Amino acid sequence: MRVCLASTSPARLMLLRQAGIEPVSLAPQVDEEAVIAAIESHEQRTLSPEEHVLVLARRKAADVAARLAADEPGFDGLVIGGDSMFELDGEILGKPHTPEVATARWHAMRGRTGVLHSGHSVFRLTPGAAPREAHAVAAASVSFVADATDAEIAAYVASGEPLQVAGAFTVDSLGGAFIERVEGDPSTVVGMSLSTVRALARELDVVWTDLWNTPTHS
Image 1: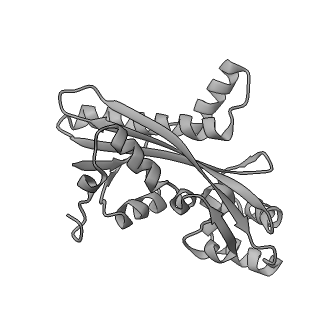
Image 2: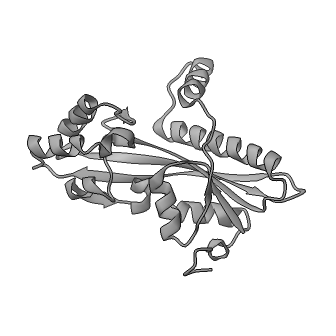
């Protein structure tokens, strides 16, 4: 059975590969800011972090699933989409993009605990049948060391790693040394909860081990 990752995230791709799955990857064509702005304007409220990541995960997966079904009608397998954001004291912290923002984030985060919210959407595509979808949100708390120095923060920001990741940190690379504790599925913090994706695949009558297709697992 084939797997398509509706993302170009290196972290999500790495997670699936480590789990024995070599997916194809397609970038979703979704204007994330416009999607959220339209919903919040229509409903006259601010979406919660859980709603935010789930809406975007579902939109991304749906976009790729629709294009894949049209371009490759014989595709038999799963499309997996995700979205993540970090919450600290009720404030949503997305990708910082600039060194200045990343530095300010780290000064605020050291010695404190926040929550990484990760939305998941899985589509089951079967030739000749209507697509089926299952979705869920996972969360994990992340506690940062209190003794990270200004110099260490500056060096980490200068590496460029935190600029394009939710919350301005990673747990599986350079940022890991500054994280004291993770409570919850650790893969959630990397970008996608594997246990959640497995549960969603099961809802769609797919056995997780049937997805193993790397040379050491196939």
